Length: 374
Image 1: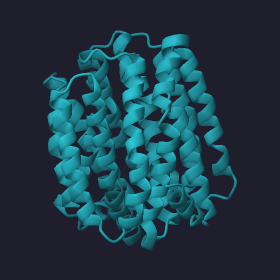
Image 2: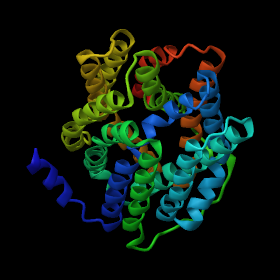
Image 3: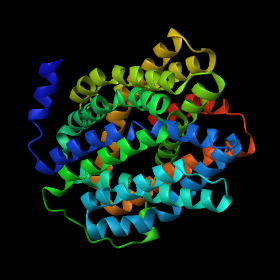
Image 4: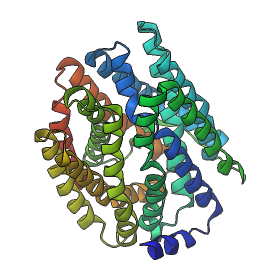
């Protein structure tokens, strides 16, 4: 395993991509201390589940409305500066959550800050990868990026949970903030490159296939079901503690490290087959989540999901980055972000009106199949 990892890392001779890999790994370490606990913080600070669903629906709506504006900004300042600019918004969001005051206006401000943070980060990251990763080795590069991120992040949820239990949420937030600031350093080592972006709605939606939109829509829905809803289920409904939830998440992430290097190596030549295998595994894991309780079963199911999601996501994302390069990059970026955020909005909007949190498990199981449409 170590020989595979060093072999892949040595092939990253593009300084911009190498800097991004290091930055994302450091960022994953810091954000992993806090991110999975944010919905739980909100719940324990007095928000009902319906309020939380409404909050994340606002974030998704903000992502939709901000997508073209953030794309113009990214084109002007460059993707690396966009990633750096994300950091104060992300840190500001963390500390605003810790000081939540229970007012509607405060929730709205929180949603705006998080929507800006997400948009700056996701758009900057997508453009930087699309610009600098070689298309003929896209899967291999994505496998390396994902493995470095997961390696850094694998212990973060457990450490974050322990910090919350023994020292309180503020210490965990401070640690995350310091690490996020450090993650900016690699991005400043070389000059950024912006692009001229001519924003035209007609160009963004020109000659798009409905199946592509549906696939991206479903990917956003599944992603949020796993990232936001699943930790709430673990803590609120299955009775897990912060430490237990962190341990489950960390063990699950470890299962995908080996898959990242291995799948990255073969995904460039077997994309569709790997997406299918990963989709089947993800579907089975979602079904398992619907029926198991806390115990060794939950570790097995979560490990299966993280492994399968890696098998599916690396070739799937490779296809997406091919589309970035084949088309007008900035226009496709806006299209991609709109589709994914509409999926997120649909998930939280549905749960807001039909507040049964376990619907997210079945929605996750169903939406994973739509990865096959891309």
